[in-house]
Length: 217
Image (tube, rainbow, N blue to C red; front, side, top):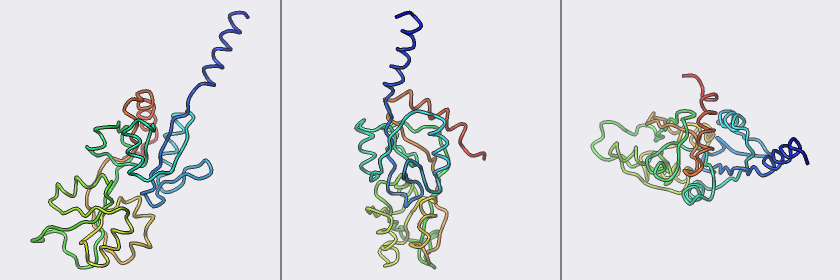
């Protein structure tokens, strides 16, 4: 075997051994982002598809409960979780790539419920793995953690909570469930992807890709 043949064999071998990175798409976003038949779907799909296509590496996708996906990321069992907003707690065990968009958190209440100027603490139901919990507490409101958005909405309708916090992309996919409730702008956080803290090459790749895919201000 001559030198050129050896280089060719080594190149083919290197290509063949590139491992696919693993993506977990959370099921807590009501279809704002999902994955079916090899394609990302939903309101957020174009942004994430652009970044993933730009990185141009093989990948696998699993749809997982958000809590499980975050636990797997913390335990180095998966390479990436999306869609997620940035939070201090998540920053402790994973790497947040350059922000891909801004997540607006919307507070939904029954008509006539006073949010500002109230003499008592507002009770807000929220998915217990939400990045918004620290924001709610910082504003002096009481957090009622629940397993999913639908349960929180039901609590508001029954008067067991003053409001429910839902990310705007998720709320856009839940118009039927939220019918009759009044939206209030509440807070904002950077949104994008969390990458395994040990996978520095993937961190760099997504930081660069997001610069090309992030919408103009």
